[in-house]
Length: 239
Image (cartoon, rainbow, N blue to C red; front, side):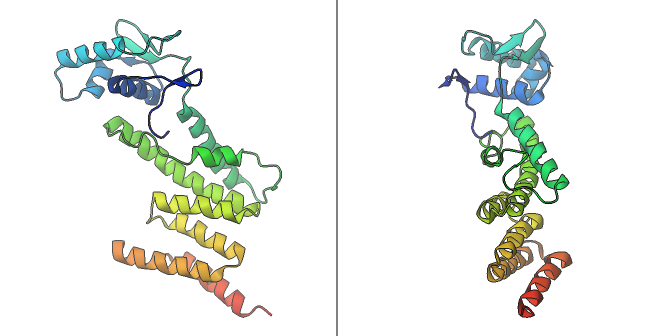
């Protein structure tokens, strides 16, 4: 997650760009791949002969550590099981954060089932944002959508525990990740309402309405509009 970084015993290890792409492809594939498949994916515009030669060069130039980075046979390649990826950790956190929010009613503030600090950190960046290989883009979009769902879930988790500042931060990060996503904006609005800041909620709703009109020619959904109307009515009729 974030830009590529290879570490061994806490120290960054220099690795050529082709090696970075090779390890990334093997990590994202999560399985053993044939050499022919890897060569075609990494050098799609090259001839088979040239792609095979480039793959051999990339393998030869991998850092020589006390354990192999890639398990290579005559015809296959696999990421060494000694390599741990933050991708696997992040996916686990994404799944647990979403599941926790969806299955919980009132969440005890002192006993969170997931480490929300770790979740906050894991949700701070997208997958290899500077890489533009097709096989990265597809996986990045999948994780990006999971990240948005998890940020919205995290906002609900924080808000249920009374941590409105953290809830607002998570919700606004979801909005920044996809500005036209109404469900993310709803989490911002719900947090403002939970704080009693109805003016901020109305301001954000109006900003969303202008954005949707300008970009899509649409209005916010009726349920969101009714939510604001109900909050305003409750405020006006409060004794």
